Image (cartoon, rainbow, N blue to C red; front, side):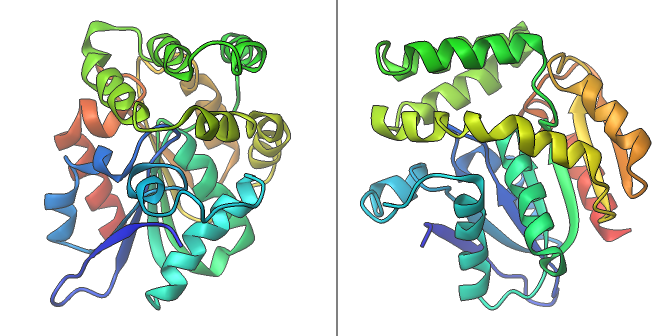
Length: 258
């Protein structure tokens, strides 16, 4: 089972489960935890191979890494804690896992909040993926990760997010990076399915106006999915919860309580 921490509220019954992106860990939510604990029960988890799920469980995940298997890891955690339903908040690749979880287990999901959501790989991101596939076993993974982080978060005001993700990625092994990178072979058909099928679960997309790779597609998705809405954060890039935490926290808490 994944490594995770639980923060229980004395009176509230609603749960919020935070899902980080590839190369990160539950520590990326450090600007959210204090505020969300005031209103909800909170689950912070480390995906397989990340954070403490690497340190304590490095030999536990011997099955192939697929989006379904990694989604099942999250279900195992909330099952073990007897959490029947939860809101789910994700960032970057974590939004793909949450959307997949909602597809497989819709009765477990109250609302979804998708920060820096990935709904389609544009031309630039597909080129990055292909370069990664070519060089993933030759070039040290951290070089590739730093390059990807800079391409996704290029501006000066993205620096904090970029450095945070690179710092967390340093804790990965080369083998672990390659396992996660192989997931890219699944990603295009999965994202096409997500764009095409309206799951009708209330969903809030929180996107930075400078998230050039992913914002245009999210705008299109929100127009065609009836239960979805979009908030665009000014002067902000891909990792909205780190770059604009006060706005992110206020907006998301108000949405989940509405």
